[in-house]
Length: 131
Image (cartoon, rainbow, N blue to C red; front, side, top):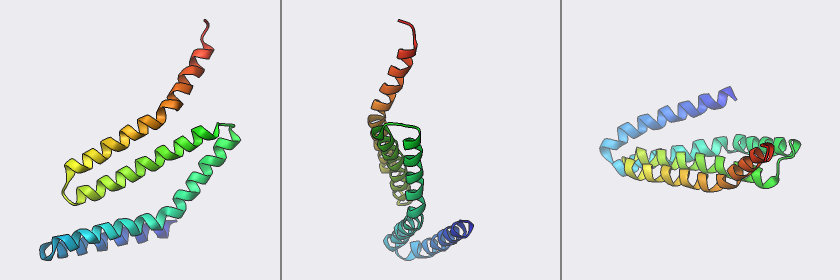
């Protein structure tokens, strides 16, 4: 685990140096370096992400949480990470306004998915209150 982060940080530093050097020569090629680096890092951690999702599912089953809620929570986590990754890549390209729109879309999609969970929590709270 510790070696993996060292490898990722080293890759990030090398990619940053390559980006700085190639940006003056060919800015579009420099941007491809950033995209390739992001994909490599994502692929290197995908196994750990799968393990985390599996752990969350197992905990949900042990706690007798409905499958729909666990699926929704996992989707929310996925949307958050994908929106953040996409936003970061677009920011690296110098398009912060597009990045802001990606972040907004991610937040709205998360809220849409969270509505059933919020509704269930409110209903559970109301069921405890005296009529």
